[in-house]
Image (cartoon, rainbow, N blue to C red; front, side, top):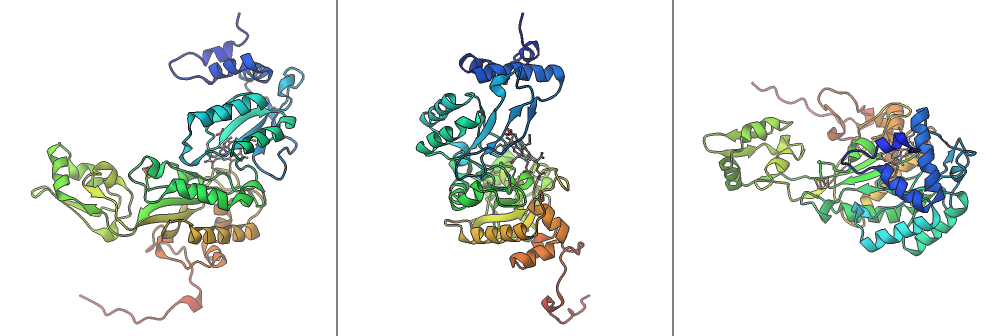
Length: 401
Ligand code: SRM
Ligand code: SF4
């Protein structure tokens, strides 16, 4: 009779099962064998048998390792210590098979052999090793040009969409930028020094495939500042293929900035109202193309639920050119972190600090002028308060009929 009836159930069905992988690893490692037993036990008891406690890590770094211990060490002695290591992944998660083998071999030598490819922040997660094995694992990773990622109150591993590696919509080189800023902010990544964590995520366009707007304190989302272009001949081809341009494109435009003349088959645009959402480009990419003057919008504040609640990020800089060496971006990020470090309370994310002290305070603190794009509804929301000395007296406009 099986010792793991609960887990066996999770092997049924057509999808890949983590149980199968755990059982395979258990053939090679006592740690993974105990893990199979502990997870089975957790399903029976309906409680996770893990606890935190004690700071563990590697020399010179404060982040990258999460201490894990079971609360049933007598029953599962090989899980007395079962720390996770976060290993920085390449931009866009492109690997050679050779590199993947190296990674797996290192981990089989030093830990459970089980990985999580990839963790939700984007790292390669090494699941489970002892305190004694942490440094040797790190040393071997370093020999293979690999590094740990972030954890604790530091910069978490920056992450990006595949961008120009595979996607025509990329408005800047997300892969290059992710690699560049990871190198630039090594100190911030490895040495926790802030009120809490900070995340930077880069998407090449407003489709936001890396979901930066929902989960990064600083989100960099590709856009353009000139107008999209429309190729009328290509529009006609879509119509010939049966597309209802009005229903599928024009009526779904969030700002209603497009118009379609059913008689002539012409699609037109009021560029001033376009908010570059990508819907029309996604729907009829051969006819509607992004503008040529490309860069990114910088947004701030997204995070999950602790302290205040979940936040989506909001616009800080409507448009910034995003080209190596990304000096303007790096300067801005340093100013933001300095301000947050000074003003943030423990466990408060950037968005929460801004929420508590106010956007005006924040903007003055980082020396950035307010612009209407920062305001959700500029004409109805008195979100930005002007200092008296910033207000310029102008003549009232002439009344018109
Ligand atoms: Fe997370 C806390 C695991 C990505 C929001 N997260 C934790 C703790 C430390 C909680 C705990 O004690 O169990 C977990 C450590 C587990 C361990 O032993 O390693 C944990 N978070 C993870 C990972 C490993 C889950 C995974 O397997 O994918 C992810 C990191 C892997 C990686 O580096 O790739 C992970 N956590 C995220 C994300 C997604 C992201 O980064 O895009 C979020 C939402 C975005 C955000 O940062 O807000 C996230 N984790 C949190 C939060 C809430 C933070 C907040 O300000 O609201 C906590 C804190 C808590 O729960 O107390 C947290
Ligand atoms: Fe392509 Fe945009 Fe998605 Fe990046 S976010 S992969 S550029 S569609």
